[in-house]
Length: 120
Image (cartoon, rainbow, N blue to C red; front, side, top):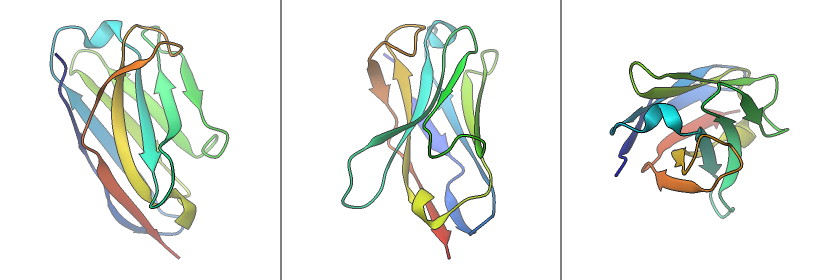
């Protein structure tokens, strides 16, 4: 069982930055790919970024060059640095733990989410 707890959401102006963090419980963190997804009001949940067990990173086209995902296996944490934020980035952001070390595996566990609001 893996528990994921997100933090760092909030209200920011267009062009600003936020750093989200996700703390994971359990002993399997380093062997899992980790990711971030988001869900805006009245929209489907969508992929944002992922980092696999070999530290390779993957990004949605909409956030490339603005967001950076990183992980610290010693602390069981994964972070999402978000820069140059836009109103369309407004959403609940969810941390995800994949079933394997590969980004191409399915998501096994979800956090409860943290809200990011970008004002225009």
